[in-house]
View 1 (cartoon, rainbow, N blue to C red):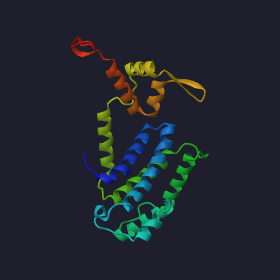
View 2 (cartoon, one colour):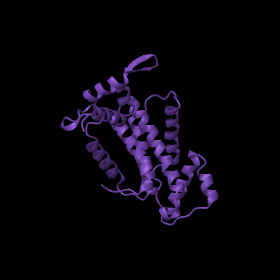
View 3 (cartoon, rainbow, N blue to C red):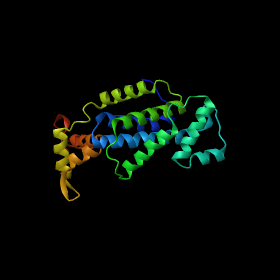
View 4 (cartoon, rainbow, N blue to C red):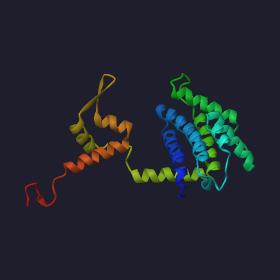
Length: 222
């Protein structure tokens, strides 16, 4: 698997998060995918502009230009368009299209009425996010790197998407039921839905505490 520079990992993780939601395909996942891909575009540009020049192959920009570019989403993308010209690279996606995706994302984030993002929209904003990332961080074969990273993560995490009956029992015995919007939910159910990694961490800790001492040792043993 290709290794990315450490300063590129933040934007890349947003892309990974977005792509995993895109592949899941449920309504909630499609909304989260759109939001995360859009966020990754902004974070990629912000991260690049705030790097030390040594991390940008020595490229420097006037401080007043950087301040102006960092002002908002539109000015950040103005920088990216200018950077394409500086590097003599083609404009693969028009700025007007990316701003449309960004506005669509704002509707999702702030509770607008545009409904569930279409697969076509997710495919296009994914393409934009990968394009911006690959240009700024000089990464080749970004699609393959993304696929390899997700496959490895799924292998490492194994059945992270599946609940474990033993962990459910331990978590619920310790923490019981929580009330959300006037409705009762088991803590295990709620924690898994919000953060599967935390679900396994908490359950694992309780599992360790529940294990009997080795070799029949007790607290009174000398």
